[in-house]
Structures are given as structure tokens and as C-alpha cells.
Length: 180
Image (cartoon, rainbow, N blue to C red; front, side):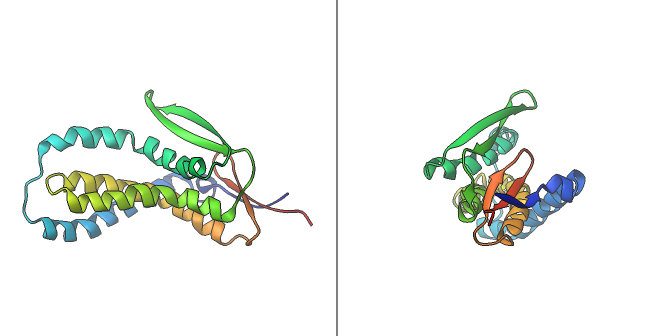
């Protein structure tokens, strides 16, 4: 296998720029989504009882997001080594390393799964739960902001040749091609 390209968002864009773009996308998505949901739900007051579950959900958002990357691999029965690191002393963040190289299609499914499973579910829950729609919408928009890095990696992987294989590395991905 030959390495066609290495993808590392922190090296290519910088950590502060990535954080700023993620923050701006999260705020912009809240502005865009809040208006239609506030019109739909009317002037209902949000319950303050939802603030504690909201804070807990925000604390565990990196754990939820990283586990949603691993879930499609488990469903497709791909062998992967799952490693977790503790962030802020009690919040685990999962990382996966596949035993074999995965195809381009599988890697796209793995990268899209948090957006589909968390963000779309959050938008649907915002529609359903009138009393807590503001908290759910805030959580969903923050998750959309976090998903920016996934979409940036998806953009890089889509540009790769059709027969490419993807390997998860420490801080990014390697796009590999078979040697001729």
C-alpha cells in the first residue's frame, strides 16, 4: 500500500481556526434553526428543569460523538480496536483503530453516522418536545458545530480515487492506494 494523502485537520488548518469555524457553524445553525422552531412552538416558556440534563448532555457530547463513529463499525462487524482517553478527568472519548484498511464507502458511513444519528435525531426531538425544544436545539446546534471536522474529512476522502482504502491514524486519516 502506498499513502496517497494524509488528512490531519489540526495540522492543515490549525486547532484555533478549526475551533473558530466549528463555533461559527454552531452559532449559525442555531440562528437558522431557532426561528422556524420558535414560530412553530409559539411563545411557550421553556422549563428550567431541563438545564441539568442539558449540562450533563453537553459534558458527554464528545463521548456520544466519538461512540457514534464506532457504532457503524460494530454493526458492519468490522474488527476495530477501541481505545478511550479520559478528558477532563471523567469524560471518556473513544478512538478506534481498524484491524484492516476500510473502503472509501465504509469510511464515509463512519464519518456521517454522528450527524445522521445525533443531529437529525435532535432536530426531530426539537420538533416533538415543546417544553424542552430550546435545550434540545442548543445541544443539536453544538453537535452540528462539532461535526464540521467530520465534513472536512469527508470532503478530503471524496476527492480520493475510487479504489482507495482509508486507515485511521492518531490525529487523522491516511488514504492508501494499492501498489501496482
